[in-house]
Structure formats: structure tokens, C-alpha cells
Image (cartoon, rainbow, N blue to C red; front, side):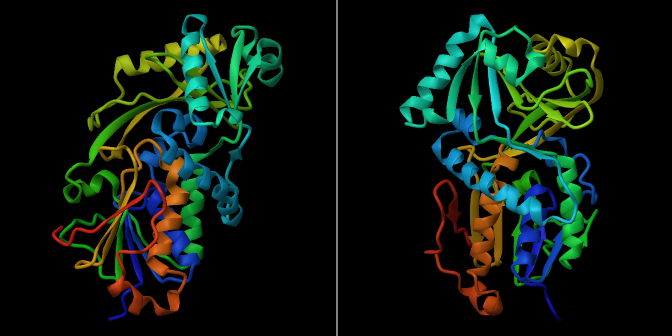
Length: 367
């Protein structure tokens, strides 16, 4: 029987990208996904699609920021190789705050200064802020401009990746549930199921995110806006055709029930406090999803030599921020740049395979 070189289980953002890049590297790849080809309802489908290494690194730390910077260098290259155009904008992020929360801006600047990275953030005054984003008017006296950050249309990207997989000859098995005890036959299985792999990751937990999508054609924005606030900080992401994505709550729960009244009120009230013109916006969607997180909120790659299963998990709320860097590493572990000898290399992978900072290789033959 001819087994594929790689069977990727889990066809969300991470699994699609990994299958695509492995196929482009020359591997014969099959993909198995419990959900649909479009990806409706997945974490990547619900997400905002932000690629913000500096903004996320303030709370997540230097390792996540470093991996994010690698990803933001890869995203334009990858998008240029896709068969469908995907909306992508890299004009940075604007952090704003209400006067009573000015201490939050000082905290951000102090954190950056302590890491010697304050050059990526510039404090700007109201006049320049109004020039950059006229929709904000004169509500904010100051803001922080963060360079080197981007956003991508998450749903357009999932669609383009599905087409790219087919173009690369990947055998795509949509709406196909795979369990831990019934993995597909392949020289190496790559498990990218996120919360679906919880039985294999005892410390994996769910983190719920709630998000609202609006139609507000009268509000024109170029950059992602973030509201600095002690409790209800949010982001507002502009998309084409007058659409906005507002998110996201971060709740330590794997509850998959619909968006709560509290969550909706927090998101909408905070967004309205930034842009009062949103009072006339139309709510297109209220949605939620669970993101997989490990105790350190950092991704992990581990290889079970006995079962020949490479598991990738724990991207937390940083799926779009980290996926290219994590996929690049995972594909290098699979191929070692020598796909022609894949059958000889994979059964004898060495523990000394290179792993960049922030990604852990764990070996557990007792899974």
C-alpha cells in the first residue's frame, strides 16, 4: 500500500498551512478535517486575523514577539503564492486610551523600554492622530503608533488555502473526524487538532474568545485600533466594504455556548466609546470560539517516535501571529530539507533537531 509521506489531522489555519507548505516542499500530503472546506465555526474562522507581534508581546513576552516577527516576515511571501488574492494590510496599530486610563499607556511604554524595544512604538499627539485616522476626531489627546503590524482576512485566507491545497495535489478529506485511536496511515502523522487533541495533551485548556462583526460604511479606518483599558480593552479591525471586526474577550473556559449578554455589552460599549459613530452600525454576527492553550500560553511541538506522530498545539490566541513560524519549524523537522530521503529520515529523527526559542520539542513514547 502506498502511504502518503504526511497525513495532517486538523484542517484549521495551522493544519492547512502545514499541509500546503509540506506539499510545496515536495511531500505527498493528505489532510483530514472534521469540519467543512470553508472552515465555518473553526477558531480561525471566528478570529480577527491580527498579526501584531509588538502589541501581543507586551503581555505575552519576548519569545512570542520574536516568533511573531518571523511570521510577519513570512506572511507576505506566502500570500503572494496563493492562487486567490487575500486582503492584507500592514499599516500598523494605533493604541488609544481614555484620559482616566493614561497609566495604561505609561505601562506599555515602560515595558517596551525595559526590553530595549521602545523604537517600535511612537507616542503621537492629537493633530497627527487626526491626520492618520480622521474617524477618531478629537476624542483622544494622544495615542501610541505601533509600526510593523498587520492584519489578514481570515475567512478569505481559509478559502485560498483550500484552493492551494487542491492545486498542490493534497488529498483533502473534509468532514472527516479522526480520533486518537484511528489515525490515518502515513509515514508521519501531524496532529494539528487543537482542542480536538485534548486527550493527548493533559495540560491543554480552552480559552474562550467572543467577537462581533459590524457593518459601518460611514466609519473609515486604515489601521487596527486597540483600546487600552484595565478591564475592557478591545481591538477594532477595519475590513473592506465597510466591515469591522471587534474583539475579543478572553475567558478561561471551554464553554461553547453562544455569546453572553455581558460579553456583547463589553465589546459593543467599549467600541462605541472609541468610535461613537458605531451607534448606527449594523451587527452582522456575534460569535465565539475556543482557543487551545498550554500552561505557559506558548506553542509546543513534540514527536512521538513510537507512533511517528508529530503534534503541534498550544497557539492560544496567537494563531495568525505564530502560524508561519511554527509551520516553518514543523516542516523543517519533517523534511530536514531532504524530502527525497523522507522514508529513511523520519523513523530515525534525532532529539538534536533544531528548535527555535519559544517552541519546545517534547518526546513522550507513552502517549
